[in-house]
Amino acid sequence: MIPESIQRFIERFSRLPSIGPRLATRLAFHLAGRDAVSIEELATSIRALAALERCPRCFFFKQTGAPLCSICANPGRDHGTIAIVEKETDLISIEKTGRFKGTYFLLGELPERGILTDTERARIAHLARYIDTELGGMAAELIIAVSQNTFGDFTAEALKQELKGRARTITRLGRGIPTGGEIEFADEETLGSALVGRN
Amino acid sequence: MIPESIQRFIERFSRLPSIGPRLATRLAFHLAGRDAVSIEELATSIRALAALERCPRCFFFKQTGAPLCSICANPGRDHGTIAIVEKETDLISIEKTGRFKGTYFLLGELPERGILTDTERARIAHLARYIDTELGGMAAELIIAVSQNTFGDFTAEALKQELKGRARTITRLGRGIPTGGEIEFADEETLGSALVGRN
Image 1: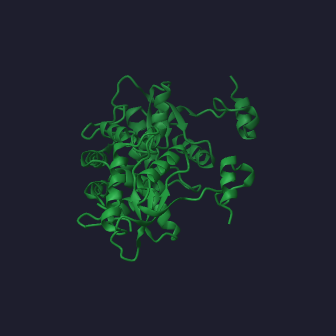
Image 2 (image 1 turned 120 degrees about the vertical axis):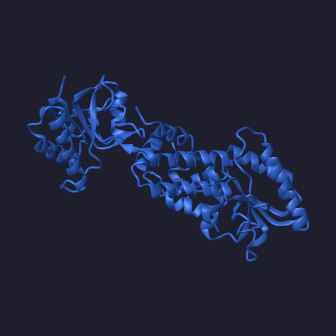
Image 3 (image 1 turned 120 degrees about the horizontal axis):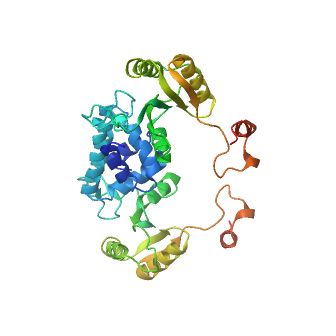
């Protein structure tokens, strides 16, 4: 009943994160009703993503052809202070605070069980090598900016073990009551951390 | 800071319905991390939508080259009973009930003010012509399947006026308590309609 090209679009797009069959269907019909030029623009802007490369230092994406990403290439950033994040959108969120002048290191998706993935192991080894060769074996600070949950806790511990002795301080983002959060609804763990981290 | 091709993707995709800047950003980074083949597949399935054409009878989409959409072309459907819907996804929802063996007519997005749009006027005239030339001037039933809100009510009235005398009956989808809906939370209007339409 549904034209084949609509069906194929729905199948492929509904597998993307946060796009279920319902949204994919809506999108398919919306796009089918658009003019050929704007459809072509969207196709082109998807295709352009294939040309992106990862920064060989931090694993964020960089302009194709550039040796490093724009953050790693920026001499105004503090290259000895490194925030270790899980994914690109976490980096963007931290950048938006305007409060961080260091650089980043992308770890990739956290493991779902209490074992580091091969990608993570390789990335951690990569970071250790960078510290050894470019920072004389000692970073000023490593800020472990991973999620405040079980997987994040496990990963943070693993990072501390693996990178021990390669940074003057290894910290983790502060736990506490989020802005706008009410004391009444904070869980005990969060409230306890907020007490310890009071300022 | 963000590579240009990621930025362009976010700009274009965040303008699509139900995709804000947040989801567009997530998608951009997710896709940038995928292999070139699967990115190309997505680009191709977007591009394929440009080739779709509207069915000259009901305005649903049809396979390119086919004279009619698969519903209008199906001799097993009741062509004298026509459900008038706003958009493609409404048609899909009705098809999924498996309770409707008639055909459809797509009206396009409802007007935001109490005035019919030019598209709607043209479409209604098109439907009237179809009834005149193919159904001998009289459809068995027109089911007005538009939203149960102010715009829908206005459009339903306009449709009744414009198509009066061209159908033995003109009906509208029943109002009532949705499945799973609790009496306590139904508004007066809905509850009143449910009483009138009790069965």
